[in-house]
Length: 352
Image (tube, rainbow, N blue to C red):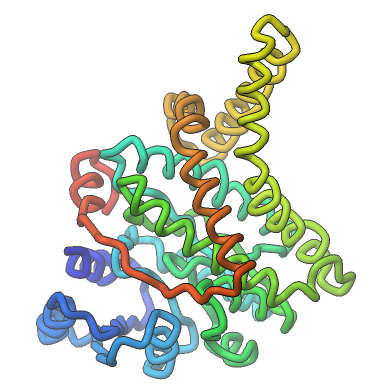
């Protein structure tokens, strides 16, 4: 449903240099590989590599073995680039110390309320974090959906690892170990398809949380290590506390507040706490949207997001923590795609 439009947007790039597009078919059974093969006959820049189903990490390893250039841009099959995305991703590599560059992922399918919540989260969370982390050279993950790497840097960091479900986070932390700088390119925009239902959202976020937890544990020696600077003292502690500890107790805090309101509904301190908390969320959203140059009219979503969206997110993270504590191995899984990004971008008149 998505591969044809994804490849069209990549091939329509304004990047002035030589371009090759390597697509790895990881044993798909839905005809995706046949679509790519047909497009490769029409455009020699496309090259298809087929393999039996071995998982995403091994597909990336196979793809990297097939590239012919020193700079590698990564994107998912459902991600659509703008014409200048690749140029903006490649620009920071003028600095030889740069090993990887993160682009700016944005939600392209905003039909459902749940997808719009994720659009708000991308702007107020992921992208705002990377802007700050870029200043301190402590970005913890260069997302596979929109990123670029120096091939020599990947090789120096030991290549793509199959140890975790978050191979992009694992690779990013290994690049830091090797002394490479990780940059953020906010103008390198990619439109991605966010899960549109609570069920698919929980599946995705459970996998993300589990993989991130694996990486944090694998690289726990970097935590509070002087030689890793802001990474060890700022962004990694932030990931542990805000992504897991605070989320794990978030449901408990909400239940305590709700119980207190029921038992003592006239206590003004409870209402002051609640409205102060919501107001701080609104201010953060407003600042993030102002920085991202997005319309401020969307920040009202913070209110229903706290009640509707957060419980599902907290559940996915708590589930990942419990699975990790049990020592259970989790597979990559597969999310259903709707190909709604192309339609939504066309209807909104946004660049494709």
